[in-house]
Length: 302
Image (cartoon, rainbow, N blue to C red; front, side, top):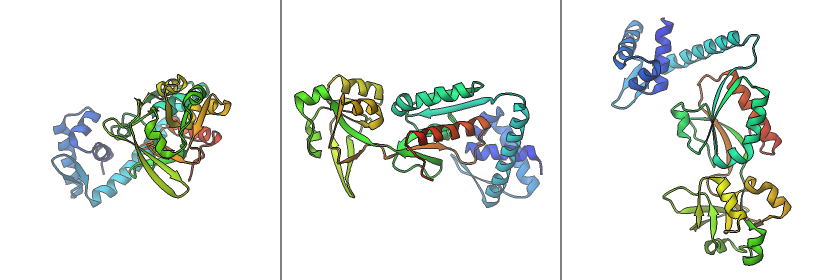
């Protein structure tokens, strides 16, 4: 069996269609199609089913893909081991983190990692899209959600707790919401999905409630939300890490503490694609971040 053709086949399956495979391989689509056809004829087997938009491996094609993927990953690992001999850890980690958690919590972790591994390039985006993993724009994404996508590897970094809170100055003038429904009448500061009404899930023991709210300030930028609450513009509904120190010191006061609130999800997950080769730099980064999350009290649930 021609290993070059096998490697080409793996790239095609990963890409999802011939055009994308050609782009990744810097080849013409016609050349990719021709070489695939030659490989199938040499094996006497149809490896892919073609549709107008995508290609899917046949049963034999899927088995061959799994073997080819394992071979490719082993070769990449061997190449990396040889090239890293006598050198500090090298490589690039492309990371996407939530705007709030990334800036307010993970920034210190990222700086600590970079100090420990100066040879690794950190390429960090602060955003909230999962799709980047599918397009191979990033190696790892950290996201808040209730359930991770089943087609991704998900490492649980721990629970996320939302709080309804306001500055102590705002509380002295207006008081805090005493009932869940009081949130409907307060000037709210929070994040939301653009184009959708804000739905906040609230749990009291096993009892679940849902409240539709109309915030007065909406943003995905949690630093801006933080400034708005501290400026006494209203009641914030944000993850507790946004005001970790201020809540302890009393500068910000929490309301409805008997309720467990959630907007986007209840857990923080580290996500990456299954089967894709992870370099030593990436695996080292994953272990480092999970340990930091564990130390911070966001223990991984295995």
